[in-house]
Length: 167
Image (cartoon, rainbow, N blue to C red; front, top):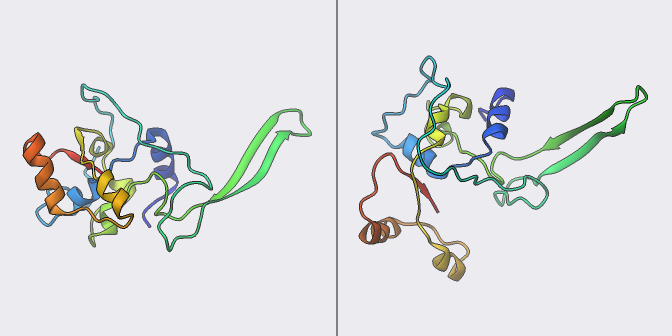
């Protein structure tokens, strides 16, 4: 769904997954364009601050949506070829809802951006962690609520529209 070869390369290079972008990009009043603007994926200056890699190993231990097929890896080649050079290659299968990933805005809103249309600068920026680990420990099926965000804001101040929410 919206993930092509060039997108796979971009995602692998960044190795960042930012939760909350789908919600922000899909809200009814969002100013995120439904189609990419010219130069949307051009080079940009990284903001000051710390870059945190949120990726995890993408293998048989990765967590997938309960109804999704699991990750599979098929070794095609691994060793020295008859010509004398080393070569390794694999085929892999992965459902779109597993491991570290980005849900495209189109996933939740018809006519919105596919992953390859999301400008790279939308994947970097200020972020906050809304810690719900205690609630999730009590209930593995815990769903984040507006009350969680309100409690966060009472303690840490109002969330700004540009902040990415990490849970």
